[in-house]
Length: 65
Image (cartoon, rainbow, N blue to C red; front, side):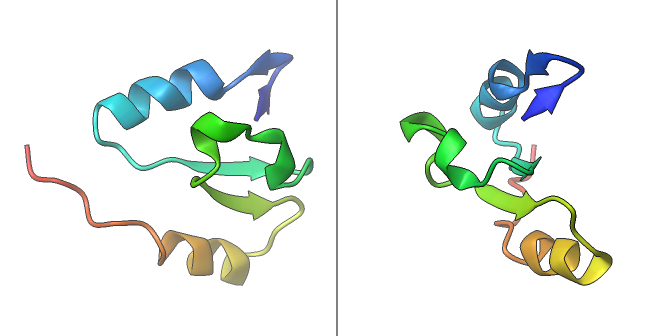
């Protein structure tokens, strides 16, 4: 969510508009996402490989371009 003091929401919105799935890695929990990203996947920091693998497995398939 926080990228060197800047919020990542504008970048995430652009990615979603382009059909690119978004996963947020945050220590704040999913309550910080707000309504626009309420359905977004979240992995809570600190996370390990297995947790990341589990969340990645929940991504929808990419749409062909």
